[in-house]
Every structure is written in C-alpha cells, then in structure tokens.
Image 1 (spheres, rainbow, N blue to C red):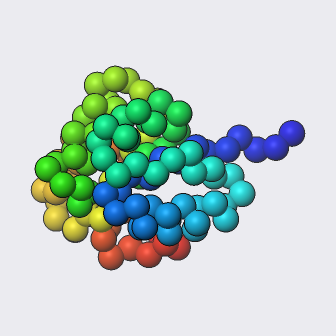
Image 2 (cartoon, rainbow, N blue to C red):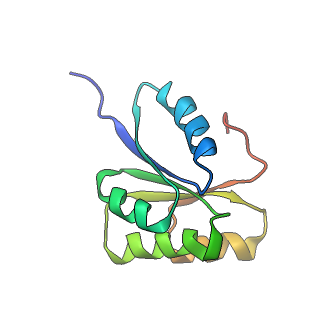
Amino acid sequence: MGEAMIRVLLVNQIRLLSNVMAAVLEDEPDMEVVGCATSLDEALKQAPSSDVILVNTRMSDGAALDLIRAVADAELPAKILALGLSESKEQILRYVEAGAAGYVLKDDSVDD
C-alpha cells in the first residue's frame, strides 16, 4: 500500500506563482496539488478537498485573513499555512489568531 497523499490547495492571486509552486510540490512523493485558487471564493469552493492550504498573505482586500477565518469557522479539517509574512510578531500573531496552523516567512526558501 502507498503512503497517504497530502492534498494541497494553493491560493495566490497570481496564477503563475501558484503554477510554479505546484510544479515544485508535485515532485514530492507524498503531496498532490488539488487546486490553485486566485480568489477567496475559488479557495472556499476547493478548501473541503484539501488537507493543507497554502495562502499568500499578499492577497488583496484582506482575502488571506478572510479565508483563514472562514476555514476555521466552517471547522474544515484543512490546515492553513500563511505564506509571505514578515518577521513582525504582530503580523504573525494576527494570522495565527485567525486560525493559521503555521507560516512561511517571505525570505524563506523552497527548501525551508
């Protein structure tokens, strides 16, 4: 029997960046990219089929925080990682309090 796959949803308003991240993640044997969303509505439609949601914090109009709160409120099992945060403790805390399970700093690399 094979390992369980981690189903990943990428959320970024720039589809090209999601496609690049998808290409990197698809090389991981235990990960499957189940979708790429460019808006809050698209992300919410695809969230139930995901184990992990990687959301770019640079989404317009606070969509990243709105998505995190919506997933938490809906009690979906997906874990959300906020991508692109600065090292500001206040910013990190805002995303964690909204329901993010973790974060990736804007200066981190793919290997990190």
